[in-house]
Length: 118
Image 1 (cartoon, rainbow, N blue to C red):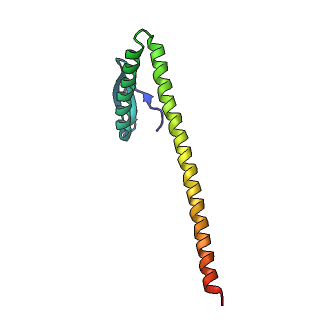
Image 2: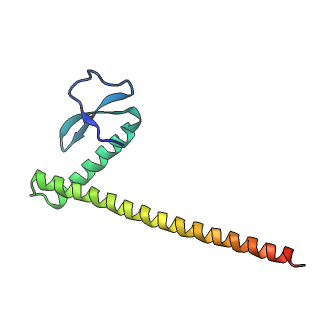
Image 3: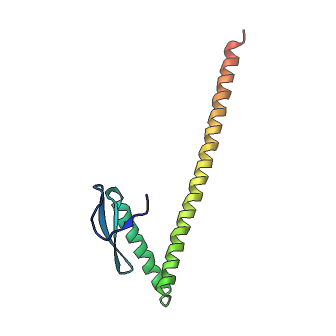
């Protein structure tokens, strides 16, 4: 998913794109996005607003700038955790494939040994 362009008007917009309006921290923003990405942006809007409100409750006196920094850090941490988990899963899948290959080779060698001995 690429970074959407902020919408100023709908002139020269490709047919598969449309303008979506989101509200974050009480600010309405408009973005031109692919239609199939709408669900992700709607869910992201909900999540961002959830964490903004959660951090506001936890730290009621911090500035909006620091509030946004906390939320950005929160999401960046989630991304990094997701990358690490994916890397771990990829390494595990590679190890399992290697074990399966060795088992197949061993099984084939064992089969050949039993059937080629005369």
